[in-house]
Amino acid sequence: MWGEDLTQLLGLKIDKVDMPQALSRIEGFLAGGQEECCQVVTLNAEIFYQAQHDPALQDVINRADLVTADGNGILWAGRQLGVDLPERVTGIDLMLALCRQAPSNGWRIFLLGGAPGVAREAAECLSKDFPGIEICGQEHGFFLKEEGGPDRVLDQLQKAGPDLLFVAMGAPLQEFWIKEHQAELKAKVAIGVGGSLDVISGKVRRAPDIWQHLRLEWLWRSLSDIRRLGRLVKLLKFTLLIKKAKKK
Ligand code: UDP
Image (cartoon, rainbow, N blue to C red; front, side):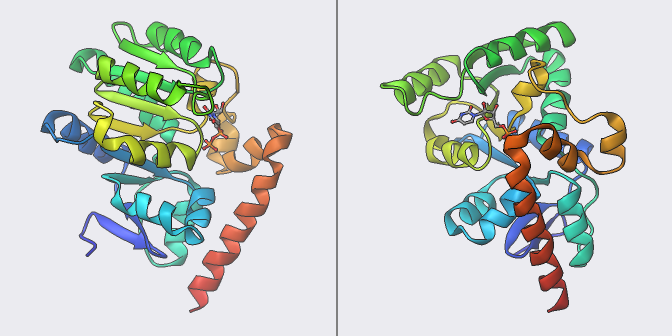
């Protein structure tokens, strides 16, 4: 079932791609004229752990068109279980790399997610950083509970018909939402990018380079936001899960 470029870790599919390969796969989706929107999942350790206990999430991941290893936790898990994954391909790095290439390729972009105002600010920052980029729409990510919100956003997306849709509503909500609406999205590619719009808009700071270099971005994120401390428990459970699987 798993080809050369594809592997699995504890039942979850992961594509063995580095950043250039991930970009070229997405370029293929954008050029390919598929009937349905292609779904890209950037899989981090927390979602990996959650999927072990959630068959519906496991199914979404395994049916995605591309799954990248988002974070050193997944690379470490691969090493423990004898799977060589080339490098981490995070949601934000993938998003920025695609935005960099968008102007010359004419890719139109829709930003969905974050608190009200964040997507607009992120759009302004992207326009400054990547002159010529076409942001064909943006919308905050708290529309699900608004009366008429889900239909309004789908309608907006259908009218905009973007090439790339970045959904920044946090995992796994964004993955489930993309899967549920895949057939009606009228985007060529949809990628869940978590808190990326917060970072791009400057609302949240990304871990300084030294923390990233030391492979401690996950720790920096947890320590810099008290609400994320609980996530450390999930990461610990992820570590124990992998250690246990290694012993088998
Ligand atoms: N968010 C959203 N809609 C929701 C819940 C959350 O748009 O219903 C946004 C939230 O404002 C934040 C992002 O989703 O910008 C989640 O960021 P986080 O860093 O927690 O996501 P992760 O990268 O861990 O998936």
